[in-house]
Each structure stands twice: as C-alpha cells, then as structure tokens.
Image (tube, rainbow, N blue to C red; front, side, top):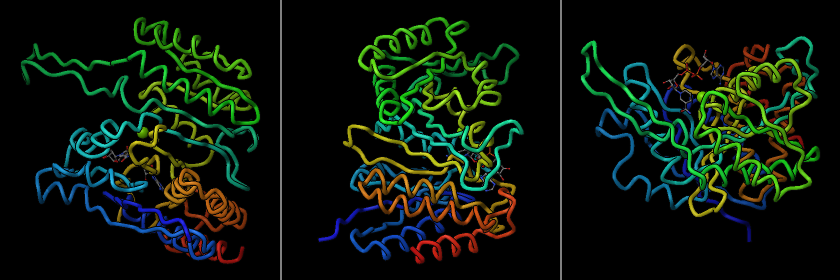
Length: 356
Ligand code: NAI
Ligand code: MG
C-alpha cells in the first residue's frame, strides 16, 4: 500500500498563487514517477480575497481545518490595498504561533552553475541551514499605541524571550548542526545592546551546548554576522537566531546565493502534534504579480522539503536534482539570468523528473 499524505494547499496572494501552481505540478510529476506514495491536495482559499469577502483571513474554525492535514503548502500573503501588518498577522502569524511551528528552517545553497552574488565567494562556500525562532521574540505580538495621531502618541513593541522558547529552538539547532557533516553552529545574538532577552538567550545557548559536545559552536552579534556572511561564507554552516534577526539574515543569505526567488522555508512543529507548513521565503511580489514570470524554485524547493519531512526523501531529492539540472542548462527565470517564464520553468522541471 502506498503512503497517502493529506496536503492543505494555500496559495494565498500575488505570486504565491503562481508559484504554488508550479510546485503542485512538480509534486504531481514526482508522485507519478515514484509511484509509491500519494498526495491528496485540498485547496484552502484563505488570503486577501477571502478576507475582503468575509472580513477575516481565517474563519473561526480555520485552525481546526488546518490541523487535519499532514502538511500545508503555503504561497504568500499580502496585497497593496491591505496594510501588511493586517495581512501578515491575519493569516501567516495566525497559523505559525497557534500551530507551534516554532522552528523555521531555511536552507541556503548555490544550485548548480549559479554564481554567488559576492565576487570573492565560491559556490561551495555557501551551504548553510538557517534556523529561525518562529514563535516569540520580536514577533510575539505584544505592544500597543496610545494617543493615536497626537504629537505625544506612544507606540510599544515588546520582544518576548522565554527560557522554554530559547531552549527548544537552540536544542533544535544543535540537533540540525549535529546531523550535518561539519557539525558547526553559529548562534546569532545581540547581547551587547539587548541586555535582557538576548543575554538569557546566550546563557541558554551555553547550557544547551553541553548536551552536544561534538558540535563546534560560536556566537556572533547580528550586525557583525552580516559582514561574516559576505566576507567569510565558508566559515558558516548551521546558523540559529531570533525571529527578527533570522528574518533579515535569511533574505541576505538568499540574495548571496543568487535570488530571493529560490529561497525555501519550512515552519516546523518538531513535536509533530500540528502539521508543519512549507512556503517560499518571498512574499507576494507586487511588482511582478500577474505577469507569470515569478521564479517558482522557492516554492518547489519548499515542496521538496515537505516530501523530506513526510519521509519521502527519495522524491525530495528528485526535485532538488531537477532544479540543479535546469540551472545547469540555463532553463531559469530572469532573476537567475535565464529567459523562461514560470510555466516554462515548471515544464522544464517536469521534463527533468520524467527523464530520471
Ligand atoms: P517580496 O518578497 O514579495 O518581494 C521583494 C522583491 O523580490 C521584489 O522585487 C520581487 O519582485 C522579488 N521577488 C520575490 N519573489 C520572487 C520570485 N519568486 N521570483 C522573482 N522575483 C521575486 O517582498 P516585499 O516586496 O517586501 O513584500 C510584498 C508583500 O508580500 C507585502 O505585503 C509583504 O507583507 C508580503 N510578504 C509576505 C510574506 C509571506 O507571506 N511569507 C513574506 C514576505 C513578504
Ligand atoms: Mg522575511
């Protein structure tokens, strides 16, 4: 009997819908080629159009609906006529927190024949896994505004770091580092200026490190980390940091390795009590949406991570190989230097998979 996986498919807004269509087509090709697992997709219509119709990004029973799936494939959320803070909190952050997807995994590497953005870096120098705390910190959602519109208006944005939250993400990052050949972890911090939450974060890192004597680790302040990523990429392997710090560093990492259009991510609940959610790092990309030219690799790579997470590593590798071979023969979208559109890249990926 083939394994059957129930996938909730949430394309969302803008290019999210365009790249998820591509990812689903590639997954279907992979399913047919492998023949030993089945994917049952259910379309979930949540996004800005749904919000405009109903007044909410997620219905009251939305999380219960989502919990029934084995995994969620998500595109992006955000449209020009809705404030970004409303759309992001209405949908994406409304899922990551309650589903306790506390680890956000963002692998970064140069696909075949892709040249890094930094002249002095070699493609093999960039092969990282970024681990982002995904449930608290600077995006804990606490704060408020008083005296709106007056000159004496006050706005607060409270970052919350718990010992429990720090411990579980740092432990997860040490585990990821331990499973990789170099067993190397860099803990990103800002404990010079942020002297409470980040100092506790550093203390917990030291405590957790004792459980992993075979992992070599060091600590970097986030500002200095940007410099190290650019000038000494080969000294890095697994990187862990807070919600905000890694949000920023992961866009930089993707740009260094070619383009934000290829960057994948997985919102993981390591306890597997809730489904994990797989999504490209990029957003709705207002400037190119509707043109059919978005790079689908970020979504397709996220789909490969989903297969890995579900236990179908062979199929996941097939997708990674297909992306490598498309890059090698220049069958890519413009952001990677090619001249194909989204549909043509999708066709090329499927052709590569069918050829295996
Ligand atoms: P963005 O990631 O949507 O776009 C940034 C730049 O990268 C744009 O120039 C865009 O054309 C380019 N780009 C992004 N993905 C690409 C792809 N697949 N192929 C080729 N080029 C690509 O970020 P931006 O402009 O800051 O945000 C736009 C909207 O998306 C906002 O509403 C924002 O809140 C939302 N957003 C949502 C995210 C999510 O749902 N996870 C993540 C980031 C932003
Ligand atoms: Mg971001």
